[in-house]
Every structure is written in C-alpha cells, then in structure tokens.
Image 1 (cartoon, rainbow, N blue to C red):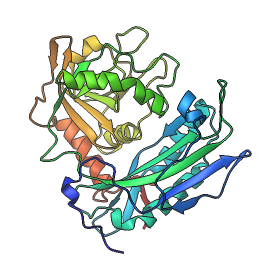
Image 2: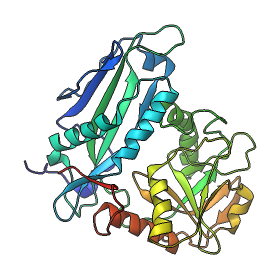
Image 3: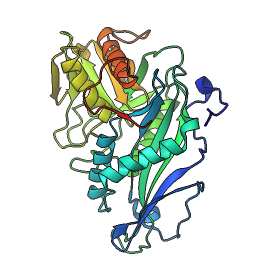
Image 4: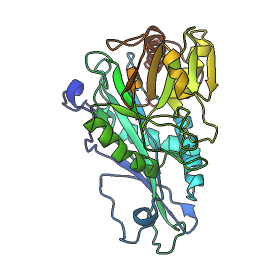
Length: 343
C-alpha cells in the first residue's frame, strides 16, 4: 500500500471519505460479528430512536505513524471503557471493550494509506459511534443499535505554533447536576452549539462553563477539560461536586505525566471562578489539540489575564504538552499500555 497523495499539512480538521469503515448491528439481544464496508452511508427508518430520543454516544482517538514506521494509537482501552459507561447511562447495549479495540485495529489497518506520514503533523482521526436504529414512538430505549467506526485524516491542530486563545465565561449551562455531563454523548454537544456560535460571534475562541447549581465553580469548555497552573507551579485540575465533567483521557494522562515525569504536585479539586485570577497559566486539553493554551478569560467585560501571556504557551503547560506528545510519538518512553501498536 502507498500513502494517499494529499497535502497533509493543509488538509484541516475536515471529513475525508476513507476506503473502509467497520459496522456491527445489535438485534435480538446480541451484537453481530461486524464487517468492514465501503458504504459510508447510514440508512435509517424515520422512526429510529436516535432521531427522536437522542440515543447516541461516540468517541474520538487518533492513529499516527512513529519515526520508526509503526502505526500506533494512544490508550484505546480507555476510549473503549468510556464508551461502555456512556452507553450504559443512555440504556444502550455496551459494545464489548475487547471488540472495540479489535475494530479500531481493523479499520486503521484497512485504511493504512490514509495514515499521514511521520513528521507531517497530521494524524488519522478515529471516530467510533453508536446509535439507536430500532423503531420507537413512546419514550423508551430502542431494541436495535448500530456501532460504527470511520476514520479521516486531519491536519495539524496548531499551524505555526500554539498561540494562546481568549475564552469567555458563558451564561449558558453545559450540563445539569447529576445529568449526563460525564458521558460522551452527542446530546451534550448539541447543548453547546448555540453557546459556541455566540462566543465566536463575540470574538472568543471558547466558552468556560460554570457549575449549573451555584454558578461559582469552573467546570469545562464545550469540547475540552480545563487545566490551571498556580503561583507555585503546581497543576490544578477542576473537579465537579456533581460528577458533571467529562473524564477526558488526555486530562487523565496529563495528570500522570505531571506527577511521574515532571514531579509536579497535582491538585484535583473544585475550583472557584473567584480564585482563577491567582493562577499563572491555563490550558484546555483534549484529543485534537492535546493542550490549547489560554491567555485570558473574559468574565462579562472583566479580563482575567494569565502571566503566561498571549504569545506562547506558559512554561509548565509547554512541558506537559511536549512530554505527552513525546510519549505519544515514541520519543519518550511511555508507561506500560499507553501506546498501542497497530502495525
């Protein structure tokens, strides 16, 4: 096989139709054996449960080529586990974790020539999703579902370096206390679309959501967890009283990197908005960017500016970013099980 002829550095974060995708259907109480198919279309009844009651969950991870020519992905076991937890919360039949990893391997191998070359900055984005295909009219879980994985190459998230962004404190709520904020379901992201369009129209890159109960504690943004660095250089990670923050795989990895590789103290706790002005650095972490630096927060016209500034990543955030990406790319020895070799 040979690489696709693409301008890897300039393909953007867009959907490209790759050759094959994995599909498995749930019917009569069990998942079928699954197949690889060239058909990128999904055909549904107008009465499919996903269209009416939003029974849908998804994941996101990346495959990439290392310097020695291997194709790997990062901690897919945690994606598999999180998808099980998301499915259970929405009364959907979990797709078995071991089959999830096998399906990821099958799809990546089948689309090997779509994996961007090492050094291009691009990666192969992997999107597993599951949704209700069975017919429902009354409000209840469907009886039939589809699990699907497709892949698409995506360009480097940061072009010309990671420039700090400006975010705003949102007047909207991302998730209700004891709701579905801690699972990766499409319905959570639908809730954030109006808020992010509004933020962009106002000139901000993202929203920072406060807890819906008291509106005094930092939670997360529409698509990423939040990290802070305090005045002593320690990592501070917001925690929710009501379990409404998504358990980001990137965040959990950064926490371990901070402790075990950089020797930082990590404080995972509820963080009040009023104390954020005392912090030196801020970042948003997730699969796509790993860490996006934040230069300032706009709180209804009042600016909270971080010492790290608007030109480059702060020193602690940069060390975390460089170390984690070094682990992902095989340049730094990884903890056991973190880098999953596909080929």
